[in-house]
Length: 116
Image (cartoon, rainbow, N blue to C red; front, side, top):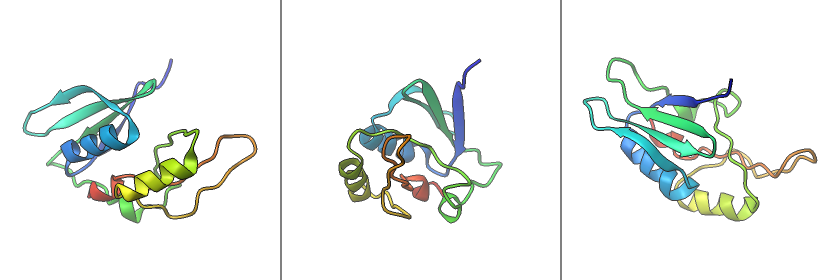
């Protein structure tokens, strides 16, 4: 077995999907133009489903600490990518850091903040 996708309920899936494609290098694997629009974004081997369900409130992602929910992307150039994403409206709760056993990490609120 392997993880096929994770899903995020947001208020504007099309805008969020566009931001992820433009800034994080995701690609649109599937999309829906139904009453409740949604996208499946390809992010490496995993899909990210971004959808809107009018019957449910979207979570207030910006109020959640990153340890509650986050998506992790790797980068060979963390500081450059972090600065580029912040310039594209991502926010960062802490400075980037490195762990000896993994690549550099840069916790970011990358467009989840507009998914209210």
